[in-house]
Amino acid sequence: MATRKSSAKPNVSAEELLSFYREMLLIRRFEEKAGQLYGMGLIGGFCHLYIGQEAVVVGLEAAAEEGDKRVTSYRDHGHMLACGMDPKGVMAELTGRESGYSKGKGGSMHMFSKEKHFYGGHGIVGAQVPIGAGLAFSDKYKGNDRVTFVYFGDGAANQGQVAETYNMAQLWDLPVVFVIENNQYAMGTSVQRATKSPDFWERGAAYGIAGEMVDGMDVLAVKEAGEKAVAHCRAGKGPYILEVKTYRYRGHSMSDPAKYRTREEVQKMREERDAIEHVRQLLLTGGHASEDDLKSIDKEIKDVVNAAADFAKESPEPALSELWTDIYA
Ligand SMILES: Cc1ncc(C[n+]2csc(CCOP(=O)(O)OP(=O)(O)O)c2C)c(N)n1
Ligand SMILES: [Mg+2]
Image (cartoon, rainbow, N blue to C red; front, side):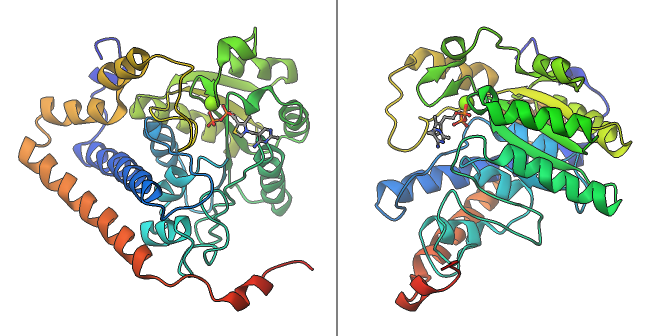
């Protein structure tokens, strides 16, 4: 913790720190609950948890404005919660219930909210990247100053469609922030085994795209970098690449025993770099909250998550007739 650049930043208000704490904790507790429900057989199919990466999306959402868009991969629960989607609707979708965001027919990887400008949830690695550029194109075409956040992983960053998208986005000055969530693994493949050019943000230089790397375990640093990126896009200067260095504590998905890394590696990140603990310490040492205040926030968040799980469990499964609705042919 001692090496964090922003720990001494005086400019963040107590209110903002508290909201970061709440938002990150909501994601973590929600994901822990999803893990439990998965273990109980209440969630089927794939389920990719976001635990460890909370500061990325919370920091960037703090830099977003109403009407900005977001699109991401299958590791998407945190993005949905951070942009304000209802935990009840998300949990109900995870458990395949009719009150879920996709009426129980999409599951963990396929949820959308037009109201919150959340465009999924994509199971095909990298597919969301050109889609995100398309969303940004629509805003540019309409002449508004909205920005699209496209989130993708270190594994996805090696794909050809990402390079093609960079080229077109820069050519057309599209207002898109490419957020590479570098959690250091793509399933069981570490970044070191996947590329000899591990500083993903630097690849933007080949297309003339500005960018930078940021500590993704520090929500304040993420927000600051996000604001810079967004200002660049809104000013009509085209895309921006943010490589956010982060870490996932759990396996790739619920079925991954994570044998490709040591327990000590994970433990070290949890103990020394945890983003929620970082903000907790800032709140306590800055005198913005007492241990009791934080305990009551924890309880409040647990209640929200338990209510979401109860709502999901009590909600019926989709009717059989739903098999024939919302399909193309
Ligand atoms: C086109 C494609 N290839 C392979 C897969 C299988 N797959 C799912 S996730 C994944 C790893 C992606 O890693 P990364 O982009 O780093 O994202 P993370 O899971 O770490 O968030 C792979 C290879 C897929 N879903 N789609
Ligand atoms: Mg990854």
